[in-house]
Image (spheres, rainbow, N blue to C red):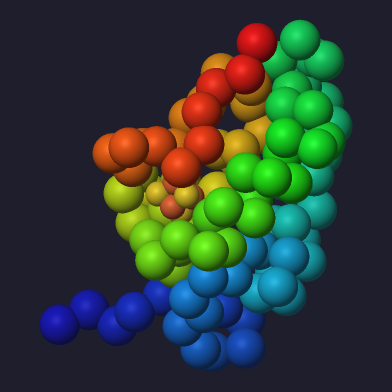
Length: 95
Ligand code: SF4
């Protein structure tokens, strides 16, 4: 059986984002990715935070990754056009 993914602290972190996992380099690259998205593609700050709050409350979040799609949620939430893959979705795309 494969070992579960762990954060830098060596533990499985359910309901944690990269921010809480202490993966500084990767977190910084996620922030740069979001900052470089054109404004028309980038999720507004308040919606982004709301999406991440939903992920934090979701049982599918493990080690900052969504179990349903395999994405880091901080990346998936960064684009306006993205939506939560759950049925029904916990958050939706925005215009
Ligand atoms: S199912 Fe949706 S709310 Fe849950 S972790 Fe994945 S993207 Fe976030």
